Amino acid sequence: MIKWLLVIGIVAAVYYLFIKKSTPTAVDKTSKKGADSKKDEKVDEMVECSRCGIYVDIDEAIISNGKYYCSKECLKG
Image (cartoon, rainbow, N blue to C red):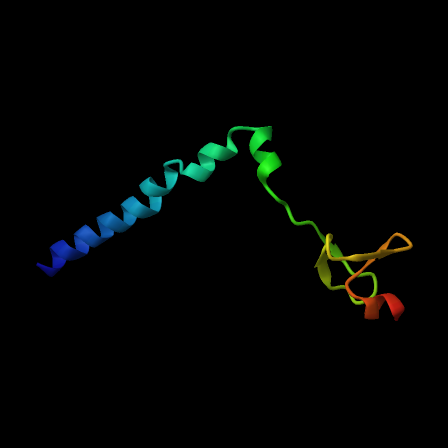
């Protein structure tokens, strides 16, 4: 009885790992639409602070003299 449960468990694991992953999901189908779907996606671009080296979102970064800073403290320092 335990052997059969073990065999069924292994078959189920193989099915979910290999066969189930290869089927396209809703995300895969929408990503194949082309440029229209890329317009809807928001991609966060990260930039490195010129003083401390921490990465910060480009929308939140402070730009001074063509350099990016993470905070006012790094800008002053």
